[in-house]
Image 1 (tube, helix red, strand yellow):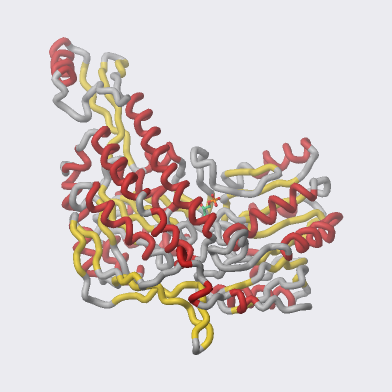
Image 2 (image 1 turned 90 degrees about the vertical axis):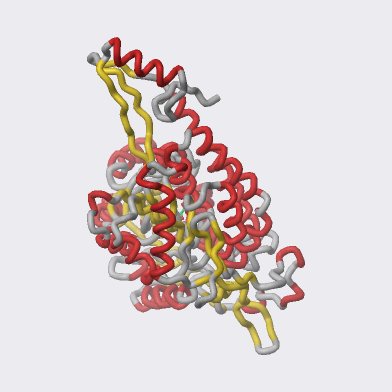
Length: 540
Ligand code: G3H
């Protein structure tokens, strides 16, 4: 076995292309509250990149800046600002016309686009995402905002008319829910956060936004755009340790919606902190361990290509990643050899390197955890199939194909969220079905095969275990118009461009009996454009 010398891939400062360098650390000393950037003189959190640089003293994680560690008192002030802006549903923002709210979001988006280069650079440095994927994340987010605006226009058009049934005239629209606490994950710190934050805002809610631990600084360049595009207090930021600032927010009972993309353990704890859980709506995207089921008749070229993408895009750090493979025993050896050969071709490097596929991992403890998983599997009879699998240098871990994995190993049930590919051989397809039935997760599955009867049987078995069955394709969230959800510990609520607008609002009806007097009242209100809600104005 040869060594990859992964440590040699870390650059000296002068080897980093000038356009991707962070010349000055970004020291954030303010946070957004009530329409102002409030100065912060308290404790701060250093941000150390997963990218190490060569220094005279050896390799060291590059310090790229710092941000405030606000405490429970500041969190409560921020909450008060959001509560005030909502104004019991009578604030400027929740009562504003849909057209005007859309205009504010459009204004924000124009300003956001101007910050693309800064945000993309910070995505690379903060979470080690490749340049191409960081740009994709930014562009996809902007597209998501524009699609959300179009979808809201379309919903609003449908709601701009009256329904008359059983002598009752009604107009049905969607109203905001109140104060939303919005927390996103480190792997898509911009995109996944914005897929809840933007729908929450545009539906008229006010927001407390807590950026993820890895992936905080990249939001800093956008705060001025938020501040100047929305009325005071509509969007506010919270920083610091989750377990210090979030409990008091939840225990206040003033958070109406918890939008969390993270772990089910945290979601469960937070929900229970709310004094009136019936008043709390939760939109959650949580743990997943999506399985690939590879039948004996699978086209191995297509399968290996999709499995590689599914398991290792962004080093396997996607909630939708394929995190375990069940392969029919008759082709298992061939599959792992072919997959291992493809894994060996992947290019490790710095996020800005052309064609890079494996990059440093942002979670400091992840390399140790992955090494433990691999070692435990080895002790129990599995092997690392590819030559350089599991080789590690600081934050780099070269992907490992581990085979044969079995019940009892960490890799069998735990969500590794990193570049390790567990492969389990099976004799009867009932085995992976039973695995899914007994799993805590229920997000997606991928089925690989060429026999339609067999695929049809599996589809019918699996659609009641997970929320998306992919045929001869990796698991993924997109297109963003598709519903993204999961069963069991994988999700609560559904996100898509359309569904998210529903998730952050409630249908509200204004109704009256169909008498001449009432008809006159409604006609006067509509004709004189006296109400933002009771209206037939049509957004073009
Ligand atoms: O981390 C989970 C993301 O929602 C996955 O999105 O499937 O488009 O990579 P993706």
